[in-house]
Amino acid sequence: MRFFGSVPQKLGFKYGPGLFIKLQFLKFLAQDNFGHFFKHDTGNIFNQAFCIYNINAPGQELNAKPFASDYRFPSVDDLVKLIEDVVDYFNLKNFVGLGVGAGAHLMLRYGIRNPNEMAALILINCVETTTGWIEWTQEKLNVELLKDIGMTKFTENYLLWHHLGHHLYVCPREEIDEFRVYFEDRPNPVNVAAFIDSYLNRSDIEINKHPCKVPVLQIVGERSAFVQDAEDLHTKLSPMATEFLKLSGCGGNVLNEKPAKVTEALLLFLQGVGLVPWLDIHESVKKISEKFVQKSSL
View (cartoon, rainbow, N blue to C red):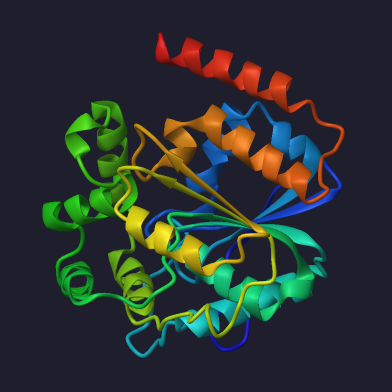
């Protein structure tokens, strides 16, 4: 699409009448990032209510070929335009946008530019501002390592911080190991570096000058690396159309760590904007909680 090549999209599940668009965050495919939550942890509740689309940034799919040496990866503004292309191509209207990390930042930009296309925004670990000097230095070093060497332990640890947040020692060992295996198995580190570099060079959204007119639900874990950023963003959004949930005892991977709490927040928020009025939230959350307890006891 446009001049950046193909944009990987996946029509994940097509059942319900509503529309859900999900955007990946750094290093994960949208279907990897959200698939387990939407397919397994939530017992297909969302799949029955929504037609769900996944969007990945160019070159981020597992089988993607390395970018050519002269390829220019899209800027953050260009990535928002690519979302617009996907929405126009499928003629999507009144959809719910969900993003995590970089995906949340992009979806917020899209919502500000295209408020009439959206029913609601769900933002997880969202950062509205440009990169600080410390983050810029860390990310720039990792970009160069990915380009020149590939995946290293240093970069893995950085990505673990990015995904799981502070205090990794309290995270389940199997969760950390799963992330490490995923990172090590990625065959296209140069492509990942290009995405990180693009996000690294983002500008402020300046939401005080460009207010968001779409209802927003923000979710962040209390140990997330971006909890302060999410709290700062919350103070800039309209209090009449914004919900904020900070999950205790949780890092950055809220979809996997607290699926029942996240599901309850999502469903209450969606019903608040007029969607899924027929759904019994209490019964749905009860089933998910029981399933999560059974899985944890294995």
